[in-house]
Length: 242
Image 1 (cartoon, helix red, strand yellow):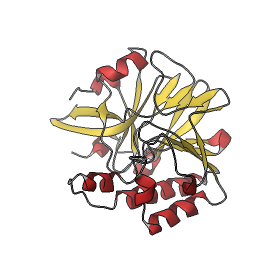
Image 2: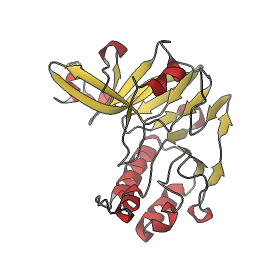
Image 3: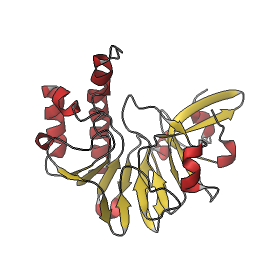
Image 4: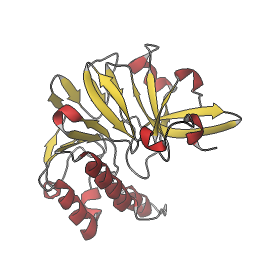
């Protein structure tokens, strides 16, 4: 069953390309790609690209199609073009490991350089990429605070506010009309937001998992689920555990 079944038939799919999200009074647009746009700062935020995950697995004898980096950068380019963002903030684990930069193909390096042209590019370090190679360009920070909001890779333990984080790869599972499906999602409560993983080969952790309870508890958690053709707000009562 397609997730589009959740959409009222009177609305066009294009109306679900993005959804408004407010965090501590700041207005954002969550994009169906898994990116987050901040109009006031003309900034696009993405999380957990895990570039070169395919080559990392290949080195371990686990063969995956070696095109994950190319596909991820292509989708990122499309999201940047949609919003014409002047600043790009990557919330950590942009590379699957610290050697990932050395495995990038010449073509992918050139694509990355093109994306960075005339833009401020900020790498936030993650647990997979605690250092970012200088030759990849941009600025490297452990975290970033703008207008009172802090952008970091791992969410602060406990009920923090004014935070946009990544790391947990949130995913939502639904059971509807006898069908079940599971997709990445944004999860927030108006005070903090955890971003979905953007990378092609990234998995997801069910937001009903115990790992999310210390962050959101039962304080009105809001969920936006990524579909193949849009982004859809989901009532928490419809969520199901794995």
